[in-house]
Image 1 (cartoon, rainbow, N blue to C red):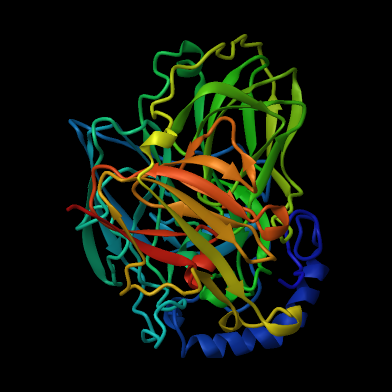
Image 2: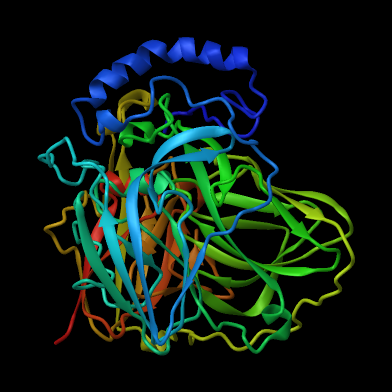
Length: 527
């Protein structure tokens, strides 16, 4: 893929120290483009001209851009075995990083955290208050289109993929309300999950707009006092993107990969996280970024991982740096050091293209000491290792891509992303698996420019090998990196296909790759 210029941190572009003159000069440089885009939006996909913000650049700062206390999402809890709630999808103004943006959103801003327990039912009344789509379904429905259609995916849940449950094939059109009802089994793993739109054609635009929220299946580590007593924080990691109109109106804002301005936690640019000396906090980190990995590092501190993708580990993993790919989650214990301010940064990482770097947050340690301890041991993990003798079948999948000639970035229509040489077709079943099967899958990556992020719905998997390297801990996940050929070119996983029949998706969780075809339908059937 062509080398692209990115806009984040303090690099070129509208960085945090941009002067008013710099902003105005940038406006002159893109003015012609902006006017043309305004005219084009009146005739194309997602625009609703009557409600668009006034013409011009993203607004100059109207609220402090950075260093404000971290705001956590509203919590909504289950009662009597049911979490019954509503979600409204609509455009809203959001003040992020000193810019007033006009974006598609849940509940007008930061989406609520949904909290429930295994065996309980989640009921959501989802209202799509986006304006009508202005474009028709294209002749190739695999490509991005109709950006105001939506639906909802419970990412990582082991639940039914059919009916009004976690069915990402459902179309939820503008101007209507829909019921979603998802029941978790009584033995569901407890941990950190998340929800986001998943309608093929519009999902990337909506996720990049910040339509993401956490789901906590409660009760993990309840018998570990060092964890149970720790203050808990939910942190949704995102890449903030917008065009000259302070919007993400269509797919062209997102791809080719040139649009990231800066990074955020819970819709805030470099928020402050307060701690007391010696205090232990539990951070539920949700990788809700739409395209890039984040390599996290907290200055002069260790990150103590206790769970990945909502599944508990059997031992604490102490790390200096923690990699979180789009779709992944990590539960981390952080023990504060002495008084001071410590930077939480996204460090340089090569995923075939440059991942965004820069400040994510600042940990401010102050006040009276609060001596706490990290756990010496963790309980036995909830899922049993898949033994060689359990395997009932093996298959190989190939992630690939075609790109513009001469390695020059072009329009997104010039790119194709495939699985097994085919772009996604919503009318086609690509993989059929018998209920109760235990399979080993090898996912190969022939795309020389990018790592990919394999995600499959409904059933978690155990990671056996990455880039030709056996994984000693064989961690359970629902999203995993498949390295590009130069980094090994394959990942091997094992999964038990239990409890639920129906059709669900397997895809790359770099959302722009999924939208351009890197997805397959999997059907689990019963004899």
